[in-house]
Amino acid sequence: MKLCTEPWSTVTIDYNGDIKPCLCADWNTVGAIGNILDKDLIEILNSEKLQLFKSQISNGNYSSCTEICPVKDHITDKDPSIIDNFTVPNKILLSVDINCNLACESCRTHNIFSSKINNDTLTILNKIYDFYYDKQVELQFDGAGDLFASKAYQHFLQKKFNDNFRFHIITNGNLLKKQKKIVENNNKRKASAVGKRTLKTKVEPEKLFENILPLK
Ligand code: SF4
Ligand code: SF4
Image (cartoon, rainbow, N blue to C red):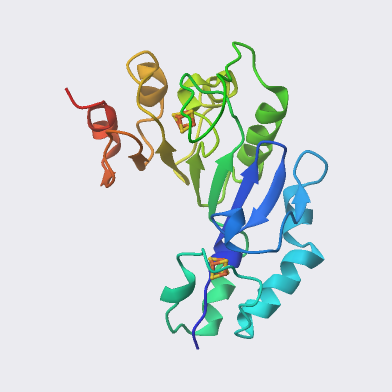
């Protein structure tokens, strides 16, 4: 049967702590399934709202999915037992810090930057770190601002990460030279990066920095 596994594999986390199913909140009408600042992640993943959405999808009912979801028209046949592989999501889009060194018109009307740590952002990041300490996960960051302009990320990325963590970095690339240490500290993880003037393919960790630098 045609089956989309995103509700099992992927969640997004907004900067206010709301968790939503799939890689983009606009792809479906489910809305927030819980807030990680108020509840434990496991409680949110067991929420009735997410269970109902999963039940719809596993029965071939895509009525909660919007027309803008790019996945919807490309769902392939799968053995339904594939969802048993996902005890918890293994991909998380973190959009948890809106701080950025730039102010693109498409994104914001004014500059949003603070030299202080956003405590909510750090709480979210720490909760994710603790939950996935020994579980496979790809963290995509940051979908709301730029992690290299974020004091919370600078703090978070000093942690010791086991090899089960994989990073997918979304950045405008402008602060990479300044924050070279952060990249180097994490050069053991498989990583890929996207962003303005940056690579779009996966690279070996030790080549991340040279590949992610803006083109000369
Ligand atoms: S079709 Fe799109 S919105 Fe629906 S479950 Fe799949 S990824 Fe999510
Ligand atoms: S670089 Fe990205 S996050 Fe920063 S203002 Fe521009 S679009 Fe927004």
